[in-house]
Image (cartoon, rainbow, N blue to C red; front, top):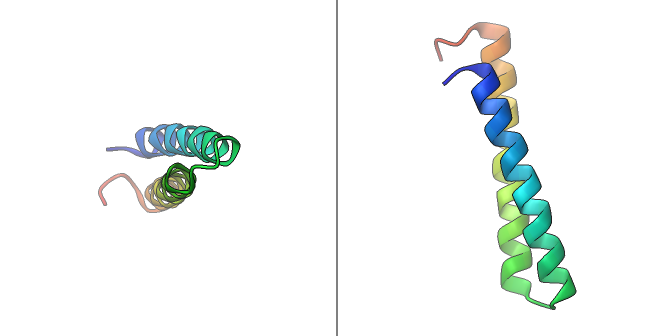
Length: 60
């Protein structure tokens, strides 16, 4: 996967995580809220991976 693909997936995971977290808070569902937070962290990690690929090249 290239830099753009990683960053696109990161954005999708961050968005989905925000939605899940918000719904979890609104419905007092701690499990869904935690799942959303975890998905946002996954998105942040993918974003960093994409940035590294952009700096070093897509051969990582």
